[in-house]
Length: 417
Image 1 (cartoon, rainbow, N blue to C red):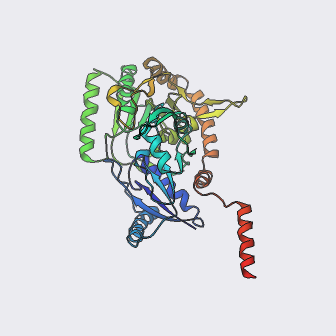
Image 2 (cartoon, rainbow, N blue to C red):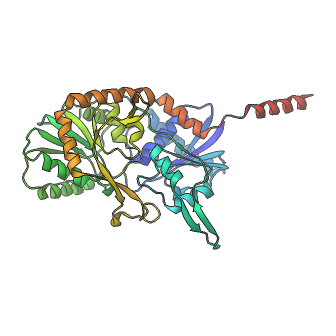
Image 3 (cartoon, rainbow, N blue to C red):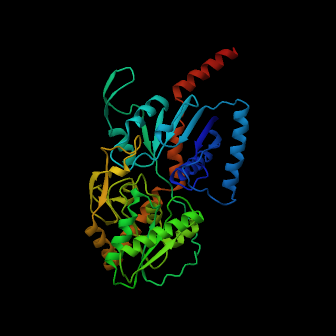
């Protein structure tokens, strides 16, 4: 049995928190292979998950046991580090980096250098992210003045998505007075493109009293201060839109998986909207799709892993209400040294295409519901917990070579003579 240290934001309400908890569940499914230790880390200023279920209690207990084990100078066989590559470190004989990767077209050179020097393998969450890691190359010069032309990643990269988590919807007790509602589940950050998502929606349905935008969002956390800040921000944006008859519903704060499922499956919901500049995976898109809700999105980024279905010619075809886009450099004010490269690109949804997609969601409801149901069936079959846990574990644990086992067997037998 291998002693594995999982270092990550196990209790954070964030994408990296979800990654950490998925990894823990996957590893715990093979208690015959792993003894799990947890080093819980913060993730920005995000809040923490609530609840007092068995899984949460196990995390809390394991965190305490890990602290005691480290205090006793205990060692680990391998580490799984859930974070961005610049934070990878050597803390065990074998180290694996588990990262969401990147939503743009290029990773920073620091990511490549740190990964090559520190970890034995990278696991990321989508083929988009894996492809960007493998495709990124730089002409670098090290501190000693040595040139490294066409420098790239020289360790393996695996891609593993998330599993479906089926729950029974639980009423959120929100009364929608509109019959044609669209759902947005997203943090309000520059990459998510929420300003245009909201503004263009209001412009398209300005005179339509039956249309509603259900906005589940926050700016940083689920705190009261954040709710006040986000409310003010939303009011300011809507005031700039002028008069309108459509409705905008604002939901802030923590929702359980059951309550989110209620939103995804609400009879008035026509589609989930996501016109972000890029997604490493896109969990709300995934959750909406496996709940059978049509999605309005661009056809670029990590979401293509699960939003596509093979046709008769075995070509992967997106089953979405498509929004056209262009790839262009990230905005100058979004360049983040060591994370988002100045010369990298992401996607920009086209306004006219987005508004057309909104109308199509209403005008062709039957068609898109049928396509969503087909996609839902595909996801439910291929993204089970059993399959995803097995895939993830196979990236961590390598079965001993049969010849090596036979050789060790013979040595044991000879020593007994």
